[in-house]
Image 1 (cartoon, rainbow, N blue to C red):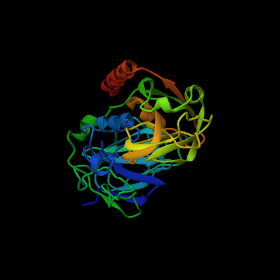
Image 2: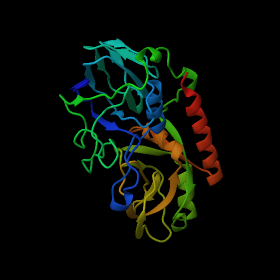
Image 3: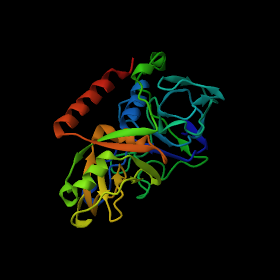
Image 4: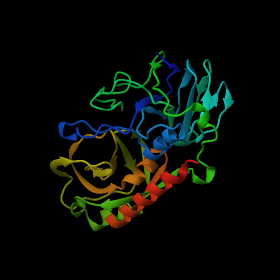
Amino acid sequence: MSDLVVVEPGLLTTVQDLGRPGYQRVGIPPSGPLDRAAFVLANRLVGNPEGAAGLELTLRGPRLEVRRACGIAVTGGDMGFAVNGEAAPTWTAVRLRPGDIVSFRMVTAGCRAYLAVAGGLDLPPALGSRATYLRGRLGGVDGRALQKGDGLPVGRPPIDPDRLDGRTVPPARRPAYPSEVECRVILGPQDDRFTPEGLTALLAGPYEVTPQADRMGYRLRGPLIAHARGHDIISDGIPLGGIQVPGDGQPIVLLVDRQTTGGYTKIATVISVDIGRLGQARPGHRVRFRGVTLAEAHAALREAAAWLAEAVV
């Protein structure tokens, strides 16, 4: 049964959950939302487990027709969320009736928004996950972005819809999405393959997000990062947030749909809690990198977890 029907798909709308771990050894990346925190909060607002399947909306969201009463929440970038043409609150649980039309426009802050529906999208999992991996055509709806006419079944809501009223993330606890973002990085694993001037260039920046930016990785443009001993290495694993620097001296940050191995030198890795911040940058936005220690990265992870735990009231 289709509880939500796609009237217009938006620019790039995909089904995501918290990803598909355990398959990188066979070349399949984890996928999942680029802004994990915004995705988790959308699910918490409607009472779902944080990994329930929802939608990731990129640059311009879809139009959806509601076929069954449900509760939804929209978080992340501002895409002008509306119900039946009237502005609706984001970062807040909203109840919908059959026949309601949910719509969005072009993003005005950030790059990606997240839509969670109480009960989660009940699509068949692929390799244990409903996350869409576009290049591998895996998960979600036939491994692709949503198309006009797609039907989305919704699972059984975990809590009484009446209990969703009033659930919100207060404005003071919502993240901002500026046009210049700072991403903390840990240098390595091949930072010894760069000149001191190259390392200084990375951390001085800024770098601009180019149009070659997607869920696989962001190509950035800015100060030249010079190699000391060539840009090729024997291929090795690529972590989430790994920053490759090919021969042109311009960095590429690898993200959730990244290739799992590669042979370019990696100068640094964006810490996990700042991946969402980068994923909310769009072409033309600027990125600055700041070096931190592993202990500082762990502290940032703890702070982010505490913020998530207290965000929904």
